[in-house]
Image (cartoon, rainbow, N blue to C red; front, side):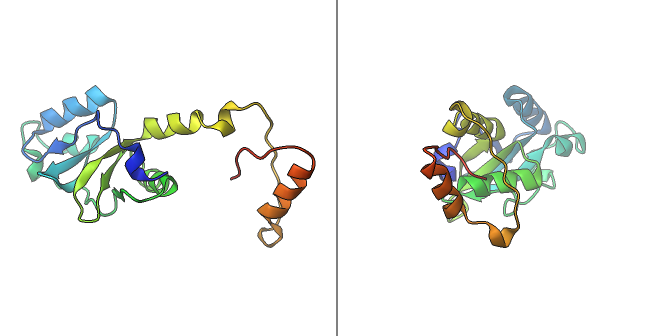
Length: 159
């Protein structure tokens, strides 16, 4: 479950030569609040709705003060949990995916992640939710799993 396997190719990145008006239409068309901005294959930043409102609509995106990609992008080999952490920490609706050289590969949309988890076995299989509260030093998933499996039950997911 790496970032590369969740890239959505149906939402294009913005190009630096496009305008705020182009960006505004793209955000609305795809129902997102952020879009990556590229110069050729290089990711140069991420644009938000707020960025558009702080500039003139016909101003080229190249003149915007964009959020830098380092903090707002993930590598293609990053685990899905890292993708979710970065998106959540930065309240992003999409997150750019880059290769080891920083080249833009595509983006992951928040809706696609939510749909993936909603369709996973832990949400679609019948069963119950068991909440255990204990001290961190007393926690052993192996022991909990052994006890549950001794009772002919299955663990579908653990968080």
